[in-house]
Image 1 (cartoon, rainbow, N blue to C red):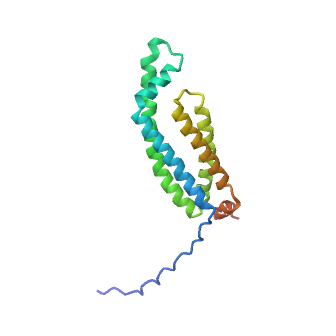
Image 2 (cartoon, one colour):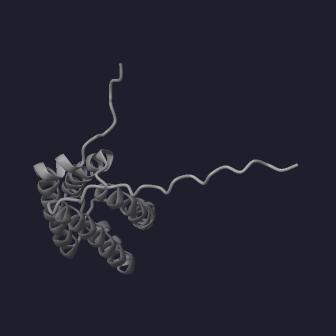
Image 3 (spheres, one colour):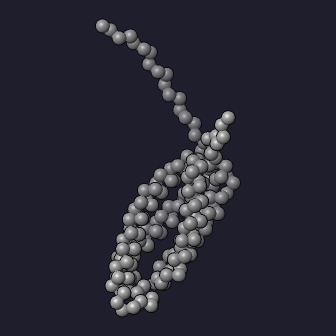
Length: 169
């Protein structure tokens, strides 16, 4: 029994993607800078974790019986930052790739990251941290503010257009 042969499918046509605008370059650079600052701070805090925890405990009004519980909670916080940065590094990889492809959801995530990141860093200022950490946090707020500025440029917004139809009749 022989099976009929079918002609091979035509070659796939190359998909033309629009070239990302130049205005998107600073957005990607600032995203990676923010990620780099977070990773550097995490490594520094991990290396100096005992002195950072001692500083935080010394600058809070904690009852003597609660110091060991607070020390443990602060230690867990430091280790959760390491895990969080690992996850964020993986997410940023996909986010940058989608942003370069003009995906609207990536554009919205970058807006959210810049706004939520600034609010989160400003809220951290009520917690006691050493001066060197405060300086890094200020630099990171400036990077996130610049990210918010560049991501809201008309060229970037126009490039990241939602191509789906929201309401189909």
